[in-house]
Length: 467
Image 1 (tube, rainbow, N blue to C red):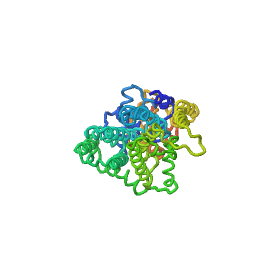
Image 2 (image 1 turned 120 degrees about the vertical axis):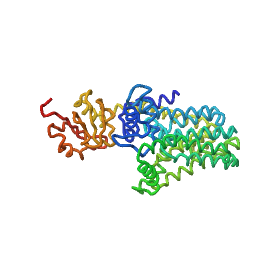
Image 3 (image 1 turned 180 degrees about the vertical axis):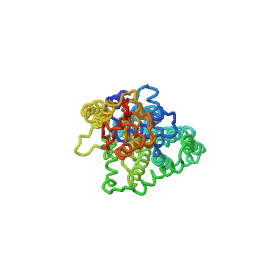
Image 4 (image 1 turned 90 degrees about the horizontal axis):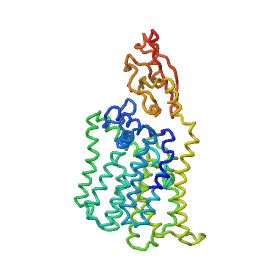
C-alpha cells in the first residue's frame, strides 16, 4: 500500500488532462448532468467507439468524492492498479508463496508501462488490470486445485467487466495462459466442465446488460459499424506504417522496463520444484504467443500487448523468489547481487512516482495549453452565464470551463436568449451570417487553441438595444 501510494498518488492531479483522457472524462460529466448512463457522449454526439465502464467509474468518483478535477478523474486508474497488487499478495499467495507474491506485486507496481497508464484516466490501466485479475484468480485457484466453479466464475466476472472496458482482445491473453497451463498439466477436462460454459455465459451477460439497452437507445447500425470498424480496421492495417509496425515489439518491451532486463538471465532449471519449472514454461508460452501475435497485427499498437505484463510479473516474481537467475561470467556470482538489483528496480519506481511526477508537474505548469485556453474563456464568460458549445467534437478545455456548458449540434439550434457560444473555426462564417442574429450583434471576442492546435472562436451576443 505504501509503495503504491508513493508511486501513484503524488501530483496525480497536477498535470492537465491530455491525449485520450478527455474522452473518458467528458462523457462522465455528461452522464452526471443528463442521467443517461447508457449512451456515452462526447460534446453533442454519442460516442460509439468504446464501452462505458471507464466513464461510469469516473462519474462514480466525481459523485462519491464530490469534486470534479484531474485527481478524482484519474483515481479509478490508480485504484485498479492497486487491486491487482492486492490480488497478488492475497489470492496468489498460496501458489507463489509469501516472497514470490510480494515480489510479483512489486514488479507489477514498478514497471514503466503501468506507472504511466496508472496515473492517467485512459482505458489501459483499467483494462489490463481486469484482464490481470482474471488471470490471477484463474491461475491461483487452478494451482490450488479448488473447485472448477471457483476456478472459472470469478475469472469470467472480471473478463465480463473487461468487455465493458474495451472489448474482447483480453480474451486472447487469458486463454493463452489457460491453454498453456492446461497443456503442461494435461488436465483438459477442466475446459469442458460446466463451470467453464456457465462462466462464459456470465461474461456475455455482463456485457449484454449494457449492450442491449445501448443498441435500443441509439442507431444500432451505426453502433455496430463503429464496433466492427475498431477491429477490422486494425486487422486490415488501415493507415499502416511499416516503420511504426516494426517498432511494435521493442516499444512493447519498453513498457516492462526495468524488469525486462532480467529475462536474459532467467534459468528455469534452477527452480527447485518440477511443478515450478512446468509453470514457468507454461507462463512463458502463454505470455509470449499473444504478445507476438498482437504486435504483428498490421494496425496494432504497443499498448495493445500490455495485458502480458501480469503473467510476466507472476513469472518474474516466481523466478526472483526461487533465485533462478544466472549471473553472467563477468559478474560476481552471489545471490545478494540479484537481491540488490531487484531492490534498486523497486527504488527506481519509487523515484519516478514520488519525485519524477511532482517535478514534471512543476516544470510543465506554465505550458499547459488546455488550461491556458480555458482560463481565457473563463475570464470573458461570467460563471452565472450559460456557455453554448456548437458541435464541439472532442474539446478537453470544456472540462475546465467554470460556466455551465450546454451542447448543441448546429448554430440554428442556439436558443434566442443565448449570450455566449463557442464554435469551431469552420462554423464561424455560419455564425456570423445566421439570420437569427438580424436583431442582435454577435461578435467574436476571443480565439483559443486547444491541445491539438485547433482554433475555436468565442462569440458574445449583444441585443440591438445594448441590454
